[in-house]
Length: 383
Image: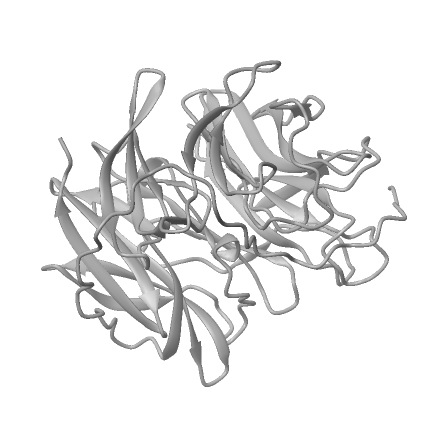
């Protein structure tokens, strides 16, 4: 157990502008929003993904009569139908309408699919489907404490044997219902049994309390990437290396200290192809940086401008044929393709509402929400 005297900062949405970089692009008119049937109102946080059978699915949160619910639907004939509520108790989902708080998704062997989210009691819940998202079992509680801490921002992944692994941000030792000081917690879920541990118990500083961590599994190896803090106030990416059996090393810095900030940027890092990408504001503008190994200066992938506004952290494009693609939500949104050591902009005119993307049947599909309704756009897969 550890306590710090640090006062938890107010969640801060970056409001940096100016600088130079990608040219402004003309945004095509957005299509009419696509309404998903049987979901209630105030639809938010859509996510496109594919199950192991290659079916395109969409998850989202929506407000109903009892509160917030979490839904999933399959694409049938180009439309999403047969919405399924994932949370067992109606209205039991906690939703803060920031992009980092979107529920976590993972696919596994034997057409397993899992979803994790924060419930109305601020516990981390996990529901697993054995049939690719058609039905879900009763949700499990991942955090094993008995308090009322604001456990949030889960990330999940299956290993090759079907065991599920999860990480989340956990301020259970803060002594009050605040986001910081917080720790990075891990849980291993096998046959319905949850085993948890604190991955940052030995460090004195808090982890960054509102930045979504990233969890990757490659064979026996687990890689957790998150935004940490240091005693002198820098908030930059760190990583924890571990194994699926539950052995973990200490947190290590991805880069030399860059961004000193007395608040949380609400912008988690993403591991991609051995490097780490993250949003940085240390230069007075928003930049998308990529690590090039410990001790090396990070590479500037994109920079913000007054005409091109970098909005959210990048996220992977899901689906077969999308392994080298990255969506950068912005105004307009970009799609980048990895080419060796470099990133190339292959699409630069997606609507600003595009916050999730997948490749399905040779098409790039992007989705987002605006004023409680969904919008969906299909584009040819970039060459």
